[in-house]
Amino acid sequence: MWAPDIYEGSPTLVAAFFSIAPKISIFANMLRVSIHSFYGTTLQQIFFLRSIAPMILGALAAMAQTKVKRPLAHSSVGHVGYLRTGLSCGTMGGIQSLLIGIFIHVSMTINASAIVLALRQTRVKYIADLGAPAGTNPISAIIFSITMFPYAGIPPLAGFRSKFYLFSAALGCGAYLLALMGVVTSVIGRWAAGRLPESVWGTDRRQFSVHRTRSLPNKLRHGWERMLRKVLKGLTFT
Image (tube, rainbow, N blue to C red; front, side, top):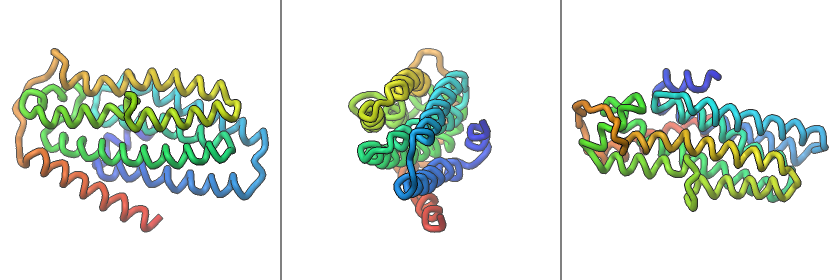
């Protein structure tokens, strides 16, 4: 449970890097081990259990958070379980769904971290503070809402397609319980992630003055450039 504290206490760029780079390296090494070694029933059952636990933990823990970055941290924990679903199958379809899921998760994380970085520059820290951009800068509120829809798994966006491929692979290899738990936790996670855009457009919102040091497009471009430089630099040394 250290991930939310790291996300909250670290700069957004550092949190995004630790959300992306370790997943890529760990799953790449696990794929090499699974392909070039014996993948038996016992190892598959261990992967099943280690896939279900992060799903449940990430979905339930995100429901009680009040800050913007902490639900993203729990969502990252839950995505570890979803991605491990493809690895648990031990089939080519599972590996393909895993690679697609990693690519989509990296894209969503970079996008969400860039928009959070832009919002942090306008003093938005708590979920209840998200109503301020809707009153002062509607464009930022719209972009933030669109960014969070894939995290919530709204069809037919990328987040939904990623989970669809992973759960289809689980059904294809006979892991019906794993697919069922994935669907249930995805529904719970959809509610938790949906709280963020709901707070933007809800009626109960905090109102305070927002300092505009840059226009929103410049903020987003600046955030995306810094995010990509950080991630690429880290992947180079990994």
